Amino acid sequence: MNAVKVVKDGERESRVPDAWRPTLSSIVDALVIGDEPQLPRVSFRTPDAWGRIKSNIQEYGAHLIGLPEASWDSSVCIWVGEFWEVLVDLYTGEEGRSDLVLQVHVREGQDGYMYQVVLVYVP
Image 1 (cartoon, rainbow, N blue to C red):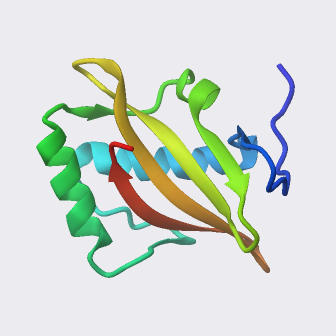
Image 2 (cartoon, rainbow, N blue to C red):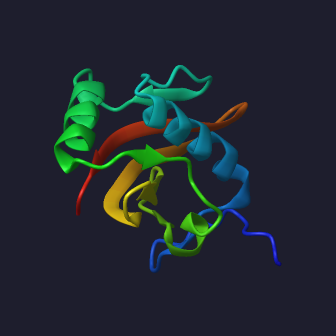
Image 3 (spheres, rainbow, N blue to C red):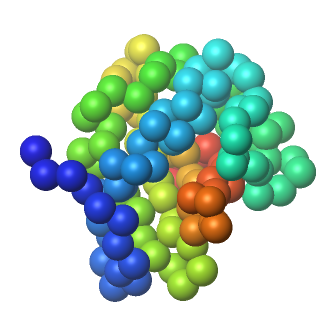
């Protein structure tokens, strides 16, 4: 399979680049066990984001599982001028691919990419 590269295309969505997938998977792994992600280069967009994320997951009523490879077939990103808007499709034990998405902003930094967790929600 061809590697998915990072592209700055503000006209159309693209697949999530391979370079970001390990960090995004680690964020989801933390959400699965109910822990606030404590990862290098990962932050929250707002001070109340973690509380809102926990609440939204709890209200959804299903149990998150780690990202299967199939998640990358439907998850997308788009360049919006200063960062990439990323939507990762989340999976649950009860239903497989769920209606929940993880929204993350990815920015370029001097030493690599910075990940800002925005929200987990049903679009």
